[in-house]
Length: 351
Ligand SMILES: Nc1ncnc2c1ncn2[C@@H]1O[C@H](COP(=O)(O)OP(=O)(O)OP(=O)(O)O)[C@@H](O)[C@H]1O
Ligand SMILES: [Mg+2]
Image: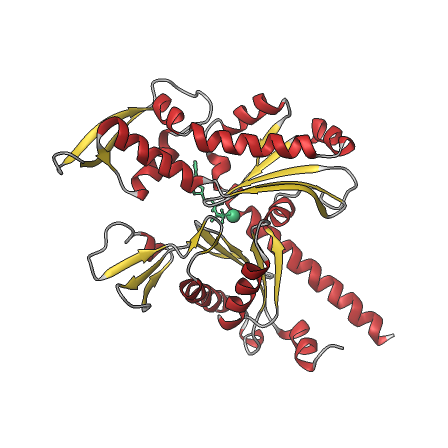
């Protein structure tokens, strides 16, 4: 039986979809679209849990804060590393999103749909639900990230033929084959953009005795990182600190050496895709020859990753138009669907 609250919330609560990502958090408000897109970073007062800034403001502080402020990323490897801080971050985003909800709909807690990695455990599932609830959500629903991404980029998930989505985020890469609105085969590895950044950092240390921060290595990846040869003349000046002398130093690096540095995480991603294809039922695998593979998530923007995957699998590979918003848009579509189903049920109940 539905409680009165549930009945009311169907018509009066706002619906919010959240892509709770390791690197970025996006919030979708029904009928409004994506209203927020901020890095999943929280600045706290050192030694306490007092939140000083969330999102973009906090990310700008990463690696630059004085001793009394700590900028942290509460989500690691696609899962919650620090529950309390994640909850604070969720609360901030949910509150901020509610300002986009029409006033008449603000008096009830919003129904919230959260996209979570498909490799998430029971305990983590519970934790996300509890955190969202304590952060101000009413009913909380969860959806697996690859399913949300596939819906968000417009793959025909409900059809009987197979589609493949590869979502390369900051902490995880999720590979899934979807058919009849269900995930038939999947693989989730805790390798994504963060591992690429770490690999670049390590390379700078080994090759040049240069320490660079997280943000610099991400810049290197975005500017001249690649998974497949692009332009051999691509070079970049990198500033960091010399390990031996302790002084600031500038080094010029090439696209080729960054590609070599990225080899390990890239190979893991290629292996995850190949492994999923190998385990995929033959009929669905056959569908993929025509359909190809769709890439989403920020990592899909790494230059040449599509070319490498095409070469390694022999299948056509496409990059989503806006890979960073795929999951959030997917939650939006699902919210509209839930709404339509609710309305249909209510209409039936009246008859
Ligand atoms: N142009 C680019 N080239 C390469 N990598 C990029 C580019 N733009 C963004 N990225 C990377 O994409 C990652 C963020 O992607 P996304 O926002 O999809 O992750 P997320 O959803 O927060 O993480 P997860 O899904 O693992 O929880 C970061 O590692 C970022 O450095
Ligand atoms: Mg993601």
